[in-house]
Every structure is written in C-alpha cells, then in structure tokens.
Image 1 (cartoon, rainbow, N blue to C red):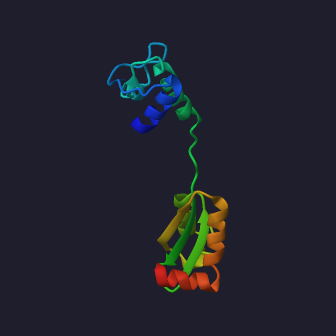
Image 2: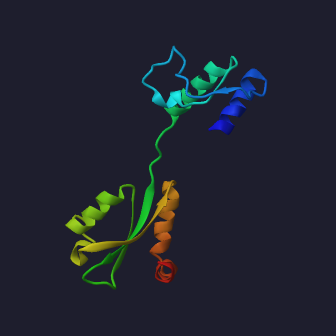
Image 3: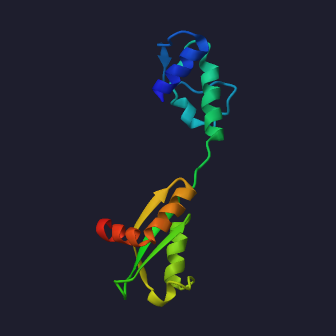
Length: 145
C-alpha cells in the first residue's frame, strides 16, 4: 500500500512526499466507523484528503469475483469410477452428488472429492472440463492426479 500511496501522492501534489504521519485518525469529514483508515499512512501536504478519497473509492468499487471449479470425484464403493464436473458452488454441488440429487452419480454414491481446480474465467473452466472428459484428458487425470 505504501508504494501505491506514494505514487498517488506524487501525482497529486507534484512533489515527492516523504513526510508521513502514522496512527492519526482519519479526516474529520469522514465517518469514524472506518477503523482501517486510522492505520493509513498519510502525507502532511495538501494531497492528504485526495489520497483518502481515492482509497475509499477503490474499496467501494471493488467487487468480489466468483470462482468456477472443475472437480474430480471418485466413488468410494466403486474406486474405478470417476466423475468430472463443473460448478461455481463446490460445497453445494458435492453435497448434491452424495445426496443422490444428480441422476448420473447417485448409483455410485458416496463420492469423495479427489481434486478440484479453481478458475476465475467461466469459459476457461468449461473448456478444461470438456478437455478432461476426452480420452487424452482422462489420461492426463490418471497421470497427474
């Protein structure tokens, strides 16, 4: 954070801000319910208010990205049977497989999670799942997982 804050300070006030204060409360116009701002190192020059505003704006616009999972299940009762799937909620999907909600996996239940791979891009996860279901993908799983 200090490196980024220093760049922002330098771009705002045009100087290399090397005078810092630590542990002071946030700017009086900001709500005091932001304890993270108290630890923010701030510049003693006039760019202080802008830096705090940039910090707050970045945190407001930051969205949580969802992850997409490709998973490999192995049957407990039939260890030679595997299932490869794709989901964005791994815990729920695993529960569904073991509870018999999935028609393709209920006859070999219970299942154990052998491996899973997380992706931040849905299309890449789907493509990887499709690859793992091919002959060469199953060979890849056997050799590497």
